[in-house]
Image 1 (cartoon, one colour):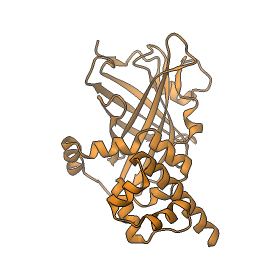
Image 2: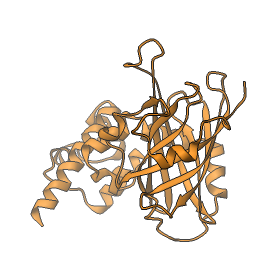
Image 3: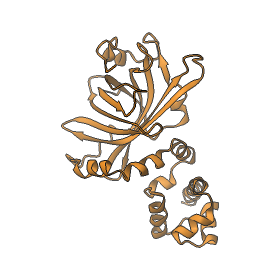
Length: 275
């Protein structure tokens, strides 16, 4: 049991260093959570794991739950670099967000383990007309809730080898009547709400969810739209860098797009946009 304990302590230490770097200094964090600096240094070095009470106090300070503090450091940094924690903390403070959560109905206590994991997300692009957008989508469990986040990347019109725009969405999903409903908030431009509803496809050996998504921004930079979306399951866990490297828009004849996804999306002629 010693090796897993050491690995857990090392992951915790690395993740705490990442969080402290965002706070400005270790001393500031220790003052705010009232933890002895010498003891906290032992947590940072991986020499000690805090008591259960101190773990809860540290997690609460950063607005996280305890298990995520022990996540793989590379995956943890990906979440931090994507402003995941900042976006969720900002969302929690919005009165609209509080009302949404308080009114959300949980139909049953099922684990929905057949839904959680990483997906390739396909839809026709609202920016590159006629092209299919491949983004990365992740569903994960946070205590009693299912949550999700996904990342879009758009190449430059002038140089397709370069990324021009990146959009990152964070939100909740919940199951009602064998459908998965999603509501998310765009975290970089901070001006768009997107809603979706999906159903699992169980007649295929591959795992897909097909549905529709609608998005509306507060500016005319991204026009309001409604379009079909196909989710293709990649595997368990959170998004990793390997899932992000192929995010782009592509010609609908690209052979890397799953045949089932393309059949569902059609030619994009039924995509609704307001000009």
